[in-house]
Image 1 (cartoon, rainbow, N blue to C red):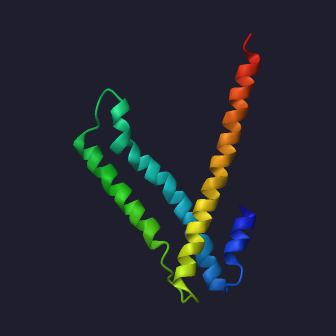
Image 2 (image 1 turned 180 degrees about the vertical axis):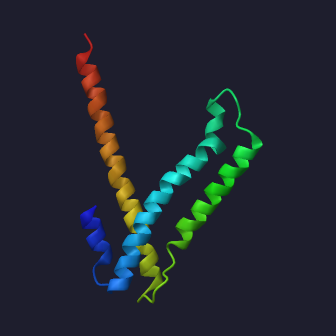
Image 3 (image 1 turned 135 degrees about the vertical axis):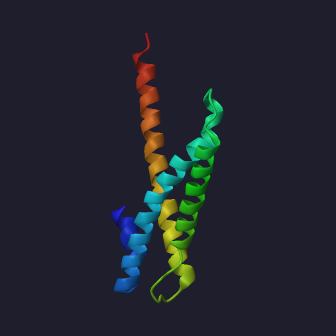
Length: 121
C-alpha cells in the first residue's frame, strides 16, 4: 500500500499529493459504507422477513449519497496539472488496492481449503 501511495503522488505538488491521499483514503472508507447500505437493499432476499420500507428508503439514500461522495472525491479541489490524471490516479489506487485485497483473500481461502482437505481422514 505504501508503494501504491508513493506511486500516486510522484511528480505532483504538496497540495495535490495531500488531496490525492486524502481522497483515496476517504473513498476506501466510503466503499465499506456502500456495502453496509447495500445489505438492506439487496441482502434481504436471503432473510425470511423483508426490511420495512422506511429502512429500505434510508439505505437507498445512504447508498446514493455515499456513491455521490466517491464520484465527487475524484474531482480535484486544488489546481492540478491534469484533472484526468488526478481521477486516473484515484481510480488506479482504488482498483490496485482492491486487487491486492482480493489476492490476499483468495490466497487465504485456498490455504484454508487445503488445510481442511488435509485434516480429513
